[in-house]
Image (cartoon, rainbow, N blue to C red):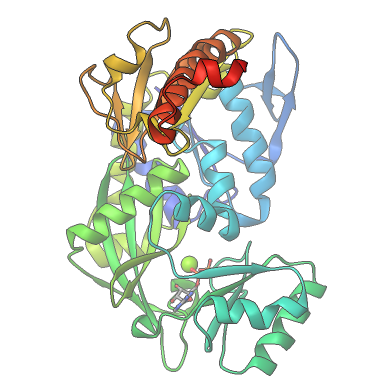
Amino acid sequence: MRLAILSRGPRLYSTRRLQEEALKRGIEVEILDPLQFTLSISKDSPQILHKGNKVNFDAVLPRIGHSITAHGVALLKQFEQLDIYAANGSQGIRQSRNKLLAAQILGRNNVPIPKTAYVRNINDVERAIGLVGGLPVVIKVSEGTQGRGVYLRHLYRDAIGLVSALLDLEHEVLIQEYIHESHGTDIRALVVGNKVVASMRRRARGKEFRSNFHLNGTVEPINLNPEYEEVALRAARVLGLNIAGVDLLEGKNGPLVLEINSSPGLEGIEMASGVNVAEKIIDFLEDDAQFAKVSMDQLLLTVPGHGILPLHLVNYPWLVGERIEDIFKNSESHAFALSRDRQLVWEPKNNLKLRYNDILIFYGDLYQLRINLRKILNFDEYNHLKKLTGIKNMENAESS
Ligand SMILES: Nc1ncnc2c1ncn2[C@@H]1O[C@H](COP(=O)(O)OP(=O)(O)O)[C@@H](O)[C@H]1O
Ligand SMILES: [Mg+2]
């Protein structure tokens, strides 16, 4: 395998360690500067040149710094166009780099996070503080890193003044519940594939409430409990990252995800945990790169007019309690999946009884699907109404 590590710092600890472990495995490895690529974009033959030469490797391991996120995302998108494997994809990197977007995705997918509000107008700050549970609050900018742009404020006056200044600088501003039981500490869980391979606790020094390693915080080993592990894995998965440093606070009711780093530093975590994390990353990459990735979104676009149609049972309460086979027995449409309690059931059994919060998922020609489903749904609603209203002969009632 030929591997390219995309990194601006060939001498940085993490880059060197990844290179070292790749070489140990007999992988041909190059470290390429993500800022020295030329992308050519076209329908038939998109290309990637590095310093003017056509790239020829099978896999990339991105180590994209915060300051070049947008560029890194574009570069990875281009690798995806060429079907070159990337250990972390453009979407995962983009989503995790913006704290607002990440919080929205995490919250939507049942991952616990501190209460967070987003404001754009200074008049809304007081209300936002109320929404997250009152003072004190943490105020942070959406695109910050290494503790820069994260503040703790105890007074309305100070909070409003700070938000005002940040808005003037055109930052996206988040106001967050302050998790005081976690003051000055957090947990970093390093996710590789579907495992947490190493973890540590970070501690701030002195009065500092931010525990970032780059702010001189200290690190210590921990045994991560399964609840924290589960949450870290889920966070990485829903954001679309294979390799991720997940930061967690220890709230009084359990773990809360703070942020997810798509190019986690290896120095602190290897030191604290004694785990060879670089080796685990290379192992994973070598294995994962063998399987071609397909983008479902892309597949769904290939047949014109075809797509996914979800049917939310909340909108059709008269179907609750019915069996799939009874409802769809005369229909040409067939649900290929059922989403229930945030689990996906593929090819749901015919005798399964539907529940209130279920979502049935169909695939096919959308026009035809809508016709077929409308027939069934309307018919059943009609019978349902008939039962509810006790009108015995609705046909007559309608026509008279
Ligand atoms: N809501 C919060 N409650 C308590 N501590 C927090 C909170 N948000 C951040 N911190 C502390 O500040 C540090 C930096 O915040 P974080 O959101 O991870 O920003 P950055 O991307 O700059 O690291 C965290 O590691 C944690 O120690
Ligand atoms: Mg952080």
